[in-house]
Length: 534
Image (cartoon, rainbow, N blue to C red; front, side, top):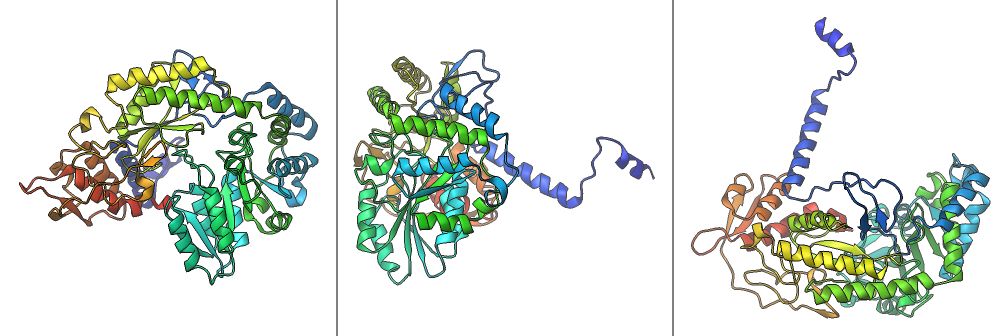
């Protein structure tokens, strides 16, 4: 009787044994992520997105260097006015999907302007580009077809490919020999689609679209690109990767977003041949079963498209600022990878804890950046991804460079080395030339570090080292490396728990932390980096 009365009291919730076990498991997983140094904490912006922002619990205004606000239009007065006008004239929302009663005249106007901007027949709007990528492959490809995808494509492309019933193939990152091999393997398929990002968001490297299109022509395949980190600002007039590489019109299908350079609100789209767009309107599930874009979003996006169709001034000014930042960072010894002309400027630090600490210290200098680490990027490839905007002034750029120099000296992080104090005696991998005691011989082309236009060639393989099978329980107390302990902790929350792994043992019987980490990483990657598996 007492138990029943307690259950009726406000604020008391009874958990079933299943829910209690579920909560306990989730809590353990969260603790493991935190122990590995990869827990992501969200900072809260108070007010508008822009170059100068106010962040909760920060006493001063910060310079923002981590937004996708490439053209500085997120809080542009003309863009805001366009959204307000549409809100007044077309209401707050549609309360409907497009094919029932959710299509307004402004939706079709925006689709036509997007198609005109890209030089295509037509376009179709989605709630986000994630939805556009989720809704295209299933419609266009059958079990008789094949999709061939770059191994480092965005998670939304990978998820979209998983939804289709076509044969799925991955080619090594930007490796044209491997792509050609996959095209030869699939010659009996009815239809083949090559899928790639135009610019890869974490590394800022540009897909070799000319070579991809040449192979597509040779083997009668189609080409699809995701242009989220290109549209509006990359290329002479901001038309994207095609224009930048001088091959405008050769790509068959383009997906992109309204949520980055084009005002930064919401929305994505597919643009291409009229027949494809018509078919997507009939069969694409994210389009058919999601509400139409809100009028305010459409109105602000129309204002952006009008700007871009009239002038490319913002895209031109952005390029000069990108070059200023990269030149200054390289002079100070930092390894900034990716295309020399793209505003994604990844500053490589290697260690996850170092990247997180570096970003926190930058706040004290008034610079807002974020450290990226596993599972967003591969283990050992932590970085601070700086993103330059056309709205940044030269003084803003110089201030950021100075802050990196100051914090880099303070934390002893420079020249792309792993140089975290807690890890100093562990993996010291210089992206420019390899490091001592580092088993780098089995890294894929995607894992090689880029220095300018040259790629680092791995050293000759070391002699075989004895390995000792040992269970995951108890390993952590036997290794000195904090990073290795964190990796083991994360693995403990996966299906690998209790499995045996090959730890590398030195001739004196002590664990070789460096090579053990890489050994574990090769086992953990298929389990923990499933987002990269097509």
